[in-house]
Length: 217
Image (cartoon, rainbow, N blue to C red; front, side, top):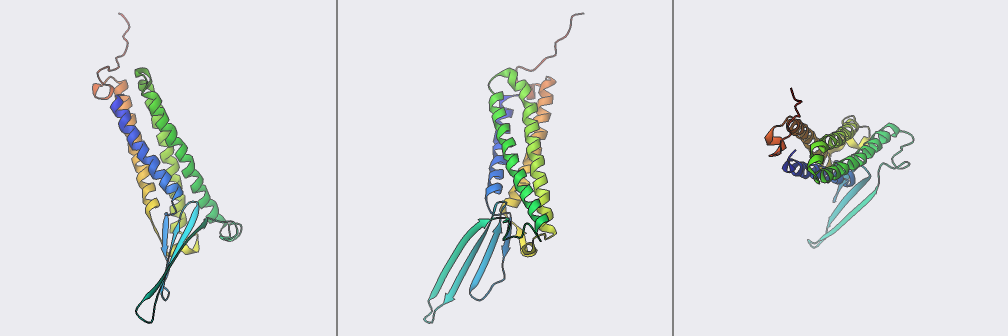
């Protein structure tokens, strides 16, 4: 494969990694806006590892002034006791925690794919072979992302956690979708280009196209 193909692959895998890191550690998979109470507005954001609540209180004063108070706090999520992970919500907690583990595992495969690309760019002979490893690593990354997405979507749609009835998908949820969609296209592109390079097509292999060794007659 051409160096350019690997550089393009490195760029898109890096984007996937950035999206994965954001979705893994940002509490923004689902967003719940609570019912407006008098002078109070609450927003709760659910992440893979923590849940954060932002509460804004605005109280009008007698002379037209306002008392504005905002509180923002986060806690580990889901918690064994607070979120009843050992009783009522055990299936949900297992599902949600499993999704978090899969996302974190997929980070390792994305990083390894980037390292494989860097290693493969060092010599021409390595560029001929390393594309298979890159495609495999990115494919595993995509599969893990899709499974995690399915688990979280199942928990959300079926409202396995009571508060999810009023929640909506947020930024991390959408980035996860973009992540595995891009990863699928990367795998398709790498496999197509790699096979074309092995077949000797110059557009994929470059000026030093691979030629099969023919035995003498």
